[in-house]
Amino acid sequence: MKHYFLAILIGAAALTTLPTEAAVSVSVGQPGFYGRIDIGGAPVPQVLYPQPIVIQPVTLPQPPAPIYLRVPPGHAHKWSKHCQQYNACDRPVYFVSDNWYQNVYVPHYQKEHGKKSDKGHGKGKDK
Figure (cartoon, one colour):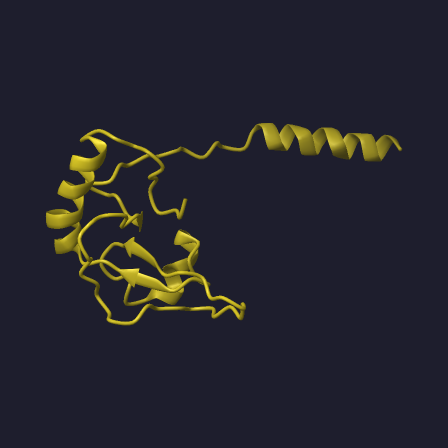
């Protein structure tokens, strides 16, 4: 019993000394934003590949709807290596072109949501 209690104390002490993870929030249109794009009423996106990419197909009566992502250069080409960062390995994914994102989507988003909106957009995660 004494050893069990000591093990719990040591475990608790170890947990309190772990470094905390820094949170980073980057809005749509800011440099460094990568992640899910909510197309909504935006113009039709230009995509890198004509068909959505799926790494881990899921057999469901109704397959999940495709999502649109902006990813750093190279992530789309090696998607199986990066899909977990975006919680999208089991989803059909379209990768939007950077040109379309910068010149079409960002101005549309800023017009609809205001220039300094952070609503639901984080770096690299599907929200």
